[in-house]
Length: 420
Image (cartoon, rainbow, N blue to C red; front, top):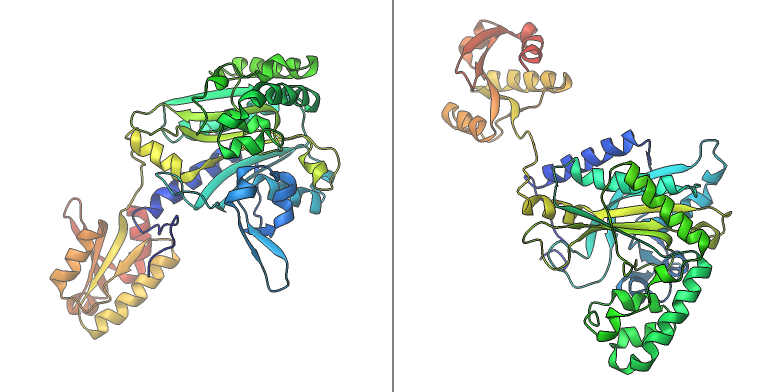
């Protein structure tokens, strides 16, 4: 038996990296005053059809959807924003006195796509969502948090790319311009883009198959169709980024793959050598209108999500080593039935005091137990034999210096805690 294609087992030695990264991200969101939300791994399929969009690749090709025993259509979540918005409406978070509502999440998502380096069918996303503010400053804050998430972990080869998708009026004008632009050559486009032309023409600009088509180079830019409000909003977002000294590039062809995006859209890319053809680390943007689509009041929103897999891949490409402490505090070496019983009591007492400690469970001799302590990088080895039992004490050896000291059992916890 093997793990399903597109999934992976994270084994000891690797899980510590994940734990470190996730904890650092949680610490960072605390600085920005975001609170954690945890939503179900599966939702009613309609949620993603209404929010992500019927014409998107995610809904049409990539969702894991099944019918449950109650004959309901259920989908494993392909992204986090829709679930957060649904929860926001269901629990009436818009009624809380402190607004906007600033949330973050960490958890597995599922998409049926071709597995490749840094992209799995089950993958883990860290994301943030801010609901209840139409202030351009919050757009800049979200992008600041995204950039700092990578920088706090040691990444340097980063590029922030931004664009405006405009409001509904601007998008409608741009949409028609795209239809007019690509219609004469529609037969030259891939099957997906042919179907997108009249359903979601913006997605043509993001097509990997047709990206070298001549018509792509002079496709109408959304920036040429922004109305005054959308232009002013985008200028304010850029002004806030400038004020925060956050470098960025404007890319008129940057679009996001989900229907709910409008106004600000952004991606963070890796410039690290050898990262591969797909350089995007994370992306996000504003989604005013999503909450209303799900039955809630008029509520502006913005957020982003990053893949933990691609984050770890970027750290590896830049040669960043995470400061993970894989040393064991103490290892108890014992020999003999009475000593083994006492060792179990010592281990239990130290663990209750918050000390990381282990012992032998394979009946090894003294020498074998010391080898185990070495392999586990134990800072201290506690030796317990007949002599120690007779004197009501235990021998504590500092494995770095080689110094050894006898400590009474009733003073052991205080002694070890002091040393550590």
